[in-house]
Image (cartoon, rainbow, N blue to C red; front, side, top):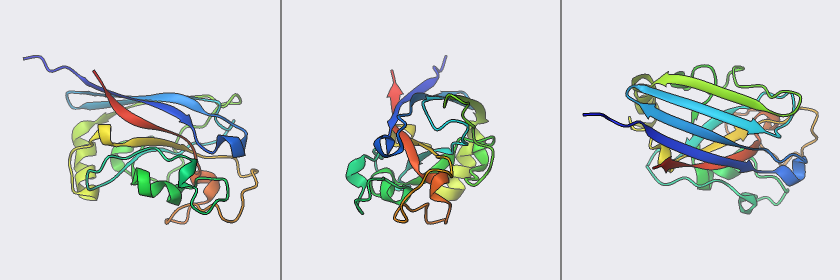
Length: 189
């Protein structure tokens, strides 16, 4: 019996672009083939020469996550910051850095965009390893990619943000965690 690979894709669109003057876009592809999860993310028009934290977000209880929009700007400062995404998108789950299966969010191993705001990320991960860590953290060994959203974060520290823009509950700087793009992960037939 031949088992076909499962494929998922997210079309990633700008969030906070009007306030930041950048309009990132790109795509994320996820392929599960036997025990390998391959993640490939290509982004354009992000902040140049900037490290971009990337993750999929979701709800540990299995609810379907949705990408945040300007409607989530509950304090009306013109920005949708990370805490404001949580009611519709859930919590940060899996990072796309040098070791996604370790699920260690705060690292300096995320991609850095080039002078044109472009970057490409590709990583193969043991599905068993990531499912084991996911179960330890979220009490579920299935990733449920079709119920997740992807976020691209990060702007240069030189950007002036109002004090109302929050980093996160983990007290990271809002320049690191401000979402600049998001997309819904969907199964590809």
